[in-house]
Length: 210
Image (cartoon, rainbow, N blue to C red; front, top):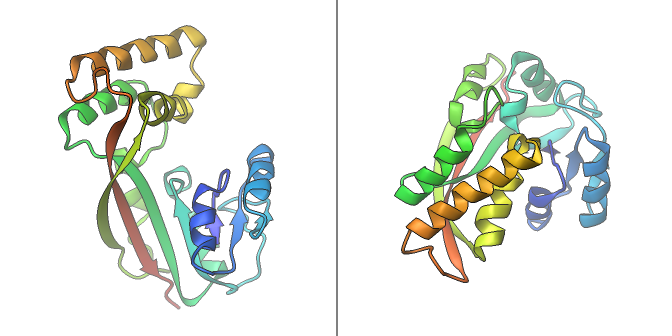
């Protein structure tokens, strides 16, 4: 299961493994886009606290870029309910690699506007663990780069961040100006038609107990 599947970006990755995938998403507009983009997936309405599946019916439940929105006991109890004994809960986040100085500057622009929005970076999601229904949380990290035009891989990625997309137009334009100034100040970005944004993938999993 892909929980909080959104428009299905990670659902496609799961389908590519040959697995039978159930994608659960609470937002109707996103479900429609998901169903159109990933017709091989079974797309269902539901939330982390109310999963539309029978007890012990899922081998692996994956939350990609989503667990921080529902990192609490009620969600973990429901996830525990639908997982088979010995089933896996996997949590995945794709993150800009802030060890790179210009990326840290970009993140500072974004993070200054997050207010109390749940995010991976705050670490608050970790408070959901340990949980008696799951074994120890295992952790791995991988690195890669996203290449494309600055408009696609820098501007549009920042604009798609939930709390930035919700800003008034004038404030969104101010963010664009800050990013443009950052790009202009960085020799490896300035004037480039193609750039690479370094990313790290944080992957976690644990096993259903009992």
